[in-house]
Structure formats: structure tokens, C-alpha cells
Length: 133
Image 1: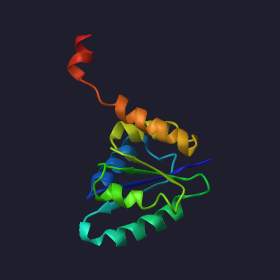
Image 2: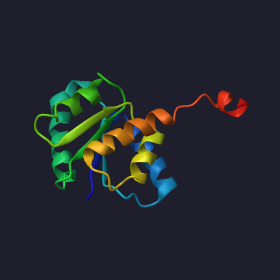
Image 3: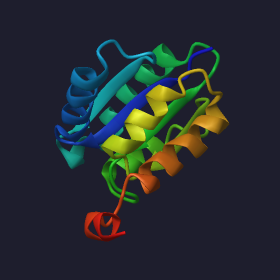
């Protein structure tokens, strides 16, 4: 079983996250594609590309779409996929979220959403407080 991962982010945010993840983990256990959003005036073209990428990634287990900012253009593009593709969309992608997802690569799509959100939230810490404890 393998859920596909699609990063739809502003500019090169997704590329930078993926490059760091590959340096850390080597070969990734899940298929990952990136759609960098560079020009907001080409919204429908991005929607078309996002749908094609989802169709490529979806090997019957669905696609987890990660965006950088809720209600921004990448998230709006991802939201357009919901009626037509087997996707779950999570906004607020960060590096801890991606690491957690890769460590649970056999999870189903719904579980993957929970893993993504918990990994993203638990990866945000006040380091001073942690050190002081």
C-alpha cells in the first residue's frame, strides 16, 4: 500500500523541503511530486497540472496533498482537487510533518492525515522551555 504525496507550495518551498528530506532519508518510501506555484494569474493551469499529477500518484490508495498556507493560492488549487480525485488536503506543511509521514509510509490515507498533522504540530517547540526542564 502506498499513498502518494503532492506538495503544492509557493515558489520553491516544496522543492527545498523535498531536497532536505532526501538528504536526510536517502530513498523515500513514498512517491512524492511537487507543484511550485509561481504565478497566481495562471490558477486554472495549475489546477489542470495538479489534477494530472494526482492521477499519476494515485495508485488506488489516494494522495495526500500538502500546501504551505491555508487559503492561499496553493491551498485553493489543492481544494479544487477534492471533488474529482481521491485526496486529502493538509495546509501548513513543515519539515517535521514530512519526516513523520515517511516514517509511517504504510498508513492509509486517513491515518496519514492524522500523522501529518500530529508530526507538524509536535515538531514545533519552544526550545528554551525544553532545555530548561
